[in-house]
Length: 172
Image 1 (cartoon, helix red, strand yellow):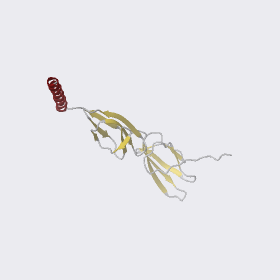
Image 2 (image 1 turned 30 degrees about the vertical axis):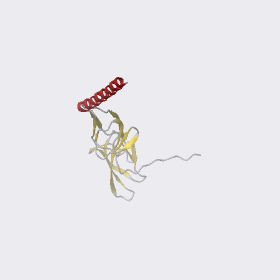
Image 3 (image 1 turned 180 degrees about the vertical axis):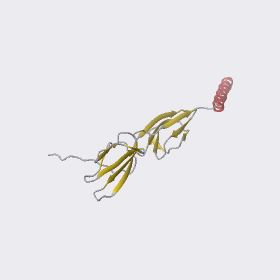
Image 4 (image 1 turned 135 degrees about the vertical axis):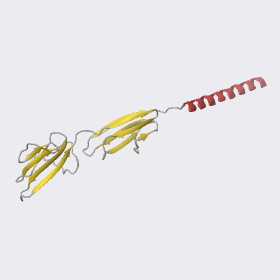
């Protein structure tokens, strides 16, 4: 006979995957609120159906009143990557997020302004574990002055080659 499996988590941060909260046997729910609004509940459990801040007050077996607050968050962090010329500017709408940036498959240090050419993948994860992933590419762009300088160097090199060929022809 296979024993039943029980899963639990100690909640000290926002969560994204909690639906029910059971109070231990012998304890009773006094009140249940979502974002400050009273909600209907059972004496032994509460249902977390939507995102928000939930507050549960209950009486313990010893007769003491306790209060627990839980934030349910299932929305990934909002990330905006603005490409402009040969740079990308990253805007993250949330605080308290972890950010990982990969350039051409290699982890690099994150900065909110990226100027090096390459293919990038940006991972932003909030406290509840929701993740946003953005991919973008920064192409190498030549300024007009750089383009003129390169063409000038090519022109000079072609002139030198033509001069050397002419000199060798005349000396033979």
